[in-house]
Image (cartoon, rainbow over all chains, first blue to last red; front, side, top):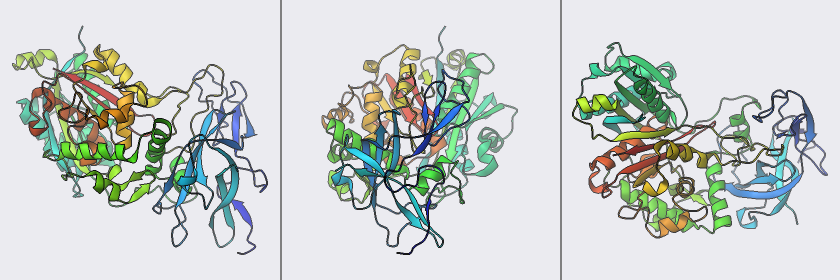
Length: 144
Length: 395
């Protein structure tokens, strides 16, 4: 492993602190609807016409709504390890935000270790490397 | 006043994978529908096409493309795009034109051809495009269907074998369908031995993309009577409602759902809302349905549809397939055509193909696939970006 700089795979979508990272979303100042990815222009609640939003960090723990895995290499822009290593994916319910967010599950955890309703927390893990840096993204990790 | 219109003719080009120009499939289907209706092409006053997004400009203006291919004769044209519901929206446009009295006879047609390999998004760094985001993060189409399937297993106790039973049933149904692409009677063992794609879905649980074309001639009830076909199969309802905020289920290509955190906002299930309007409009209920065609993008998704169409309570769909209720010979056969399992998806043609199958069923012309005394049929499908449809036909 090199000492390459660490950057977010998608800039500005989560904090970069390795201890307790959080997704960065937004919240409508008028009705309280949350958005991830963040929305700063128009509220999609049909009962609200606000255009004022605050950027907010989202809950970093939630419960698994469902889960699966990827047994085959996805097409670009996904950057696959060679050889391709399958990974699990979880859809996670955030209680405060009342929304579901998808993400990969950390390396080494497959579907047989997951269950609907399981508590998970958000962590950062490498998505792929480039020549200049290591691209990290959010992943879900079962809470021990 | 009745909002019924008559289905005078239906026609299809078989599904397959040849990569030919989509126009030839559409023309083949349209000519078959015109012949089936017993009218002349020049009698058609409105051509309503379902667009294809993969064939350049001719695909974006499919209505005009088909009208030109059949020979310009002055008819008005329209083109609809609504992902998997494109065919239903094209049908809805024709119905509106007919019921408003602006035209008597309309041709509705959709066709597609498929490129080889993955439909990958455009390159570059494009985080504003949810389709780019999800592929970058490693989330493909089967991911979404596998999430729905796994949730059924963990919450309702469905098994991989239940999903296999759906595939086995549909492959038996499609075996004798001349328009189906895959004609093989798969066994539970074949499904279980096929490669895992996205746990719990295996290769034989997910549908392919295909070439194909489907068309219908629809007309006013007065015109049908004039033709001596007052007893033709009728379109009794077309629902193309959009979701209601907040949408509860994570849908392709998004990586999140709406938030239901605001006061007065509840989470809603989009799929379940589609047939509600159709049943209301037709003035009938799920207990009246004799046969259904539903969008089995995965064999597990077919079970979700049973519940969304109110054929059973939520969580009880697997019981219907286990007991053979939805198999030919059962009380409520589903996907007698063979469904997407035997066809593969030809997006702009698929919703029309569903109606073609139901028309043959209600006329008693479905051959080995015939459901006894079929009187009412319903379709259901759902696609990207809040598109979906449910069509009811009756005798």
